[in-house]
Image 1 (cartoon, chains in turn brown, yellow):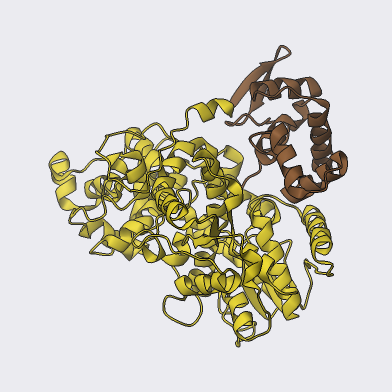
Image 2 (image 1 turned 135 degrees about the vertical axis):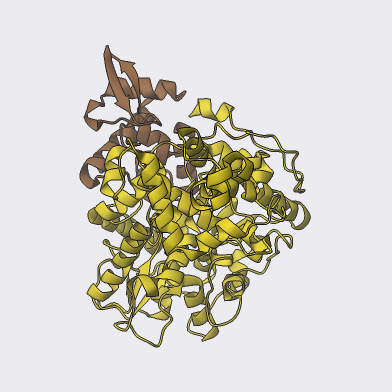
Length: 113
Length: 496
């Protein structure tokens, strides 16, 4: 178990930095977590954060990579799937499954991924 | 994560595998995260170390020795000949003597001699014997989770000692006293709670499959479906859940769908048995292995299918092919015409040989392909009807789908394959340096065919191998797009 201090409160995380209590998440905290990851959040980042959070609230799991790519193609008007994938990795260099999930306040995906 | 990356120790690839000079304790600080309370309790283990744990540990050990004669034999018969010492990718990569298979096993044999041999209980230190202690358990937790249970050492052991059995027993004893590993225990809990390692609930799974169907339709113009929970389908397909989530895994799922479509065979995946993988096996827990395995056969019965086909997942194939019949058989409710279960490679190759589906290998002419044998398929199981089918069938299938294929060096593949470096329940980021070290021997021989043959595609039949190499390739300076499934090749080559 680990934790970090944010806004005068101790926020508990798992050993890898994912929030223990997902309800603790807010937008300011996302900015803070992203900074720790070396990322300055832009409007493009937020589009994906908002979408993945919306998906999670509907389905209780993060979206599959192909569903995320499909959404990015729509949002950014990118025809080529590989280009859309590249776009995601430019925003979140350590990949959407782990880094985007962490910043968006979702659990880390488990399994053979 | 960026911080962790600075500490990654990535070897330079020369194409050679050198035996390192021993550095005692070199990887003593690489540790797994401990299992969390709710997962440990949910799958039948204490949450943490409790008073009197030593007695309990001896009790579990004794029980294992009684029920598992192989373990008892392996404790007794090692003559320390040293044949295994340089065969483990984790020793080759870390240089830590506790990662020599005999060194790792010695951590258990010392305790075994203390409690279970007359010499050990009388002469202790003189007989290289010592009791359970927190210090020893810490060593166990470190080094029995730096073993991928790949059994390469066993292949070279003149006595045939299966070191994976020792690793599994050590993990079972540790779990029994509340010392668990987060990665595996969390995953097993998710399988029981939701149905798969990733925790994808039915509605999310259907949504993912809808997106995939749309993609296939756009790419092919064909109305190819991925049915879910369809009663009365002929085939229940059980893939690793990574096939529903990650890349390059999803490309293989598309490949399976095209094969079923073109062959006109009705099929379904299940939202209940949505996982082929069985992490119960990784932690040596018979009870959990059996329960996870049972889900698949229960679902086959409920959906009234005629046969079960297993997707590209290495250890799942072992868990399903080797153990199902004794754990949860017989399968007389399925059609006796078919092998139960059938490997997807065997299934697809059979359809090609019977002329039911056709491949155009020129569709993969941009690829120069090599194949990495996954440990649990190559060394722990069989496939098809002929000897060594587990080695020949995937290769025949690749050659039917691609014109350019080159083997990796002899002695590093087939039954002597080096592990990808992350099997056996260690595909987790906190031990990235162990994974990098363990990947080194295989990466060296891959580098060799990249240089000499221009190989630009690594074909795989295991979800763990796919993720591990997709993570490793960029660290070594290669594009991760050069890694993919055998059914990704099928997907490109099949004439629809």
